[in-house]
Amino acid sequence: MTPEGLKTASSVTEGSWSMAPTWFKIGDSGGGPGLGSLRGEAVVLELEPQRYLFALQDYSALTAFYAFAGPDFRAGMRQDYIAMLARIGAIRDSRTLAPKHYPLLVTFDDINNPASVRRVDPGNLASTFGHGYRLNAVTLSITHEPVTEGRVDNVLGWLCDYKSKRLRLSGQTGPIGDRILANNVGSGDFKNDECE
Image 1 (cartoon, rainbow, N blue to C red):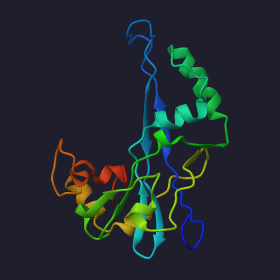
Image 2: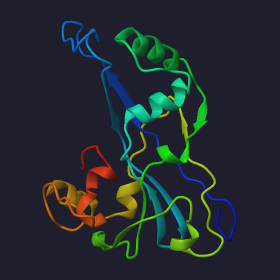
Image 3: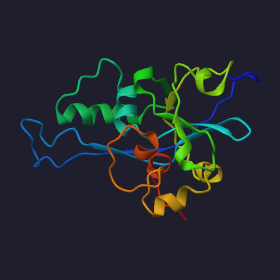
Image 4: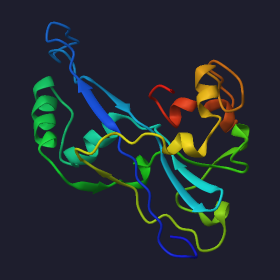
């Protein structure tokens, strides 16, 4: 919600799930629950000219898995995951995420300066953007639409340069353990497919 009314944005990402072979056992798991991955780009919402809110791809395919599996699903054996994945594959629906499952929300004080990235509190958008800004909901939907491409590139013209050099938004490389957001967010949080 903005002072001018409701604004929405979306992005289609591709989630995939791979199961370890049954011969790869850890305890009684029979191959384990598997691993999920995402391909696509962050959600970009232009709140007003040159002021954007980004919902980063810092979540995993597990977020979607548990959103659609529901609160009654209990992680268990390999066959439990296989059965639930088959049920989820038939769903064409949306789910509202609980705030604890929200992706990291960020903005930039200067959209042309990667190091000006700033965390946005989903429960208090007004503290970042001003009076009248509020987050209504974050939803996930299962769709057959193609993966969204180009929206992030259109806003963050510098992103592919950072991606090709494997830079954090601070301009640094490699793992950095401090609490500065620009040192811990990289281009892959905005877009995890290749740049052209």
